[in-house]
Amino acid sequence: MPSDKQKITVAVLLLVSFLSYSFYIYTSLPVKESPVSNKASEGKQLWQQYNCNACHQVYGLGGYLGPDLTNVYSKRGANYISSFLKSGTAIMPNFHLSDSEIESLTAYLQNIDSSGKADPRTFKIHFDGTIEQ
Image (cartoon, rainbow, N blue to C red):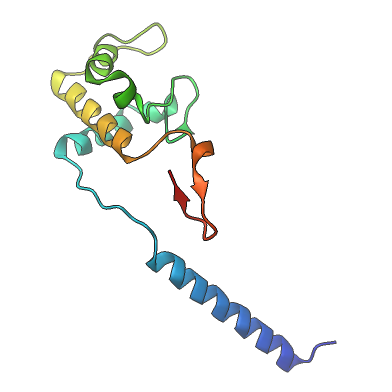
């Protein structure tokens, strides 16, 4: 049976190890800072206002009624996105967005597209828990 001193030693060792590893992880994260345009910021606000995430996914997260829109800009282009936003479809309602709102949502989708890929199954997971696309 371990003594109280041994238990305290093990607890302190575990605590120091945890704190050291946490410090290492949070100080060496590969964060890529990229400026976001005002239009993309407005588009994000519209995305939240119209609750687009209820039906659509971004980075594999969100609803399942509509498609994942993470990389729709590079696959289909701005005109395709604009057409859908202007007219809607049988499933997606027409929100009667203004041209400015459509430009903002398109800029937001372009920004998302430039920041990553949609399918997390293709990500390379590193030993420290970070991912690489």
